Amino acid sequence: MEAIHLWWIGEKDPGPRTLEYVRLHLGRALGAPVRIWEDPARPTDAYDPRRKQWSTSRILAWMGTAGPPGMVLAVTDQDLFIPILTFVFGEAQLGGRVAVVSTARLGEPGLPDPRVALERLAKESVHELGHCFGLVHCDSPGCVMARSPSARDVDRKRGDFCSKCRDRVTRSGGGAT
Amino acid sequence: MTGENTRVLVVDDEEIVRESLGGWLQEDGFQVSSAPEGRTAVEMMKRDRWNVMLVDLKMPGMDGLQVLEEARKLQPEAAIIMMTAYATVDTAVTAMKLGAFDYLVKPFDPEELSLLMQKVVAQQSLVRENAVLRKALKKEHRFRDLVSKSAAMQRVFELAQVAARSNSTILVLGESGSGKEVLARTIHEESPRAGGPFVAMSCAALTETLLESELFGHEKGSFTGANARRKGKFEAAAGGTLFLDEIGDISPKLQLDLLRVLEERKFQRVGGNEPIDVDVRIIAATNKDLKKAVTDGSFREDLFYRLNVIPVTLPPLRDRKEDIPLLVEHFLDRLEAEMKKRVKVSPEAMGALLAHDWPGNVRELRNVLERGAVVAQGDVIKPSDLGLAPAPARAPGTNAPGEPVSLEEVEKRHISEVLGHTGGNVSQAARLLGIDRVTLYSKIRKFQLRRDGEESDPSGN
Ligand SMILES: Nc1ncnc2c1ncn2[C@@H]1O[C@H](COP(=O)(O)OP(=O)(O)OP(=O)(O)O)[C@@H](O)[C@H]1O
Ligand SMILES: [Zn+2]
Ligand SMILES: [Zn+2]
View 1 (cartoon, each protein chain N blue to C red):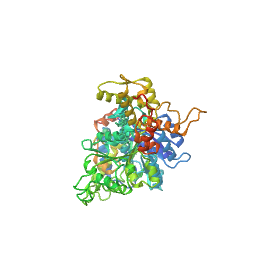
View 2: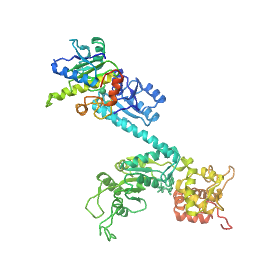
View 3: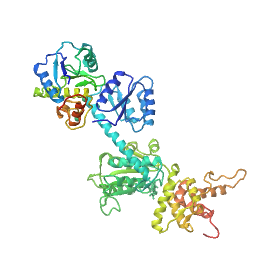
View 4: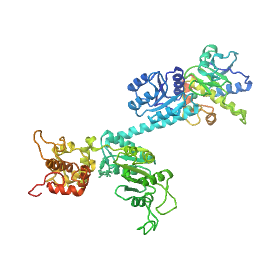
């Protein structure tokens, strides 16, 4: 199947390990090849100076033209929002091909182990791409598609799909095993 | 949480709100539609059913409160959540008073929205469950000992069934004989307290001191005549339900005592000082207009609110005449068991029963049928066996035009009519006429009226 692209669009350098970890995790969960996309372009229009946050819908629209073809997950360290919510961890076009996640709220200061934040980022990345595969939120205990409005909720779930969700990903073109 | 069967309508004049909220809700699997203004929302309510509506308070044209009001009328079972940009408590409170499920301040905290939607889904599945229940109740036309097919009573049954599960205080309102006590008993039997006692207590007719000691009990020697320590109804009903009938009649002091008990869930026996925990569900009832009593100062407002947690109003029998044939059937079944014979009601008699005004409600109907069954010759109750006033359309005491009658004649006819209405119940008739019982008895004798209102048959019967 076509490769999924992983694209850093944040401000600070994430370091080589972060994206590599997410790449490996996504590949395992989705059963698809995942490649890093490198492009210094940034969605500057998506910044809302009043809220001091970045609008996910504007980022997603920008990605559609500025990014590579096929499925793309953008990762940023900027704080994201949708107009009706105070913040979001990420967003995806349901059944579409673009998604974005942010590390801004996944690692609260004083988090004893930096790997916890990395684990959360990996889970949210799978989750948002799950939406691109057309999945909605799932009730099965521990499934990565559970709605997780807080970091605590993210910690409570696993990093992969339940069997029901995995079936759906496979049927809609993913290669999850 | 998935909302697969939950239909959500987002009403907001801002497109980005409709879009971002709609998208968020779709990810939860909700079936989401949106309306850019109040009027469109009302149109959509007329066309389709919605489980949940998220409505912006401030919109040009029809505002959120107006949409809420329409929604309460058009789709009373939908859960309405108000969205406001201004965290003004008063608009939110107004909305909640008008029946909104909850409100959210924009922009929403994701966790708060998430929890609220979970609550709504749970509430809506309860609504669905009740719809199933309603169908079952409708088919049976009964709720334990209560018989009815009228829509208003079906709503009472549903409310009672749901209320039974909680421990909240219930206030039953309704005219005398409309079934307040049976309803209270039924709620008790449907509640988790069914294994405990049901204790009924009428608050009318007793002096303040007596009622106080009846309710709370007393210690030995606490007043003259208190020869031994005695438990009151609150203790007797422990673990069960206490039914306080005629609550509108209690004195100001007892109103205050009762308020304390409801607030503190503790009381003391008269003459005692050891606080005793209250473990009862209270169901209060009255045939008085308590709200009016509050306005004219005879009933404490704070107590009214404490009691009025779940108000249930029993409609008078004259407003649900479709129940009469069903109730007749029910009471004749019971009479059959007692009298070992099956009596029927002739079509004419049924017509008379349907035409009657029933000031004494179901109790009066029961009495009329019991009497009819005894008086009837053979096994069919005829109109004359019922002892109801004929031609109920006639205003009391009026005559054919151009036929003047004496004041005494008017009085006689009026008394006769009222007695007919009460099914021969002299005390009730006296109350309706505004005279005491002794006076009424002497008038009955004077006019040679039968207790049921018809003139005595001189040949003796
Ligand atoms: N819907 C009903 N189905 C069957 N029986 C009923 C119904 N409603 C009332 N009854 C019967 O009518 C009689 C009067 O009911 P109840 O004593 O509950 O009335 P009430 O409203 O408490 O009267 P009051 O205010 O005078 O105390 C009882 O015998 C009761 O069983
Ligand atoms: Zn999601
Ligand atoms: Zn799942």
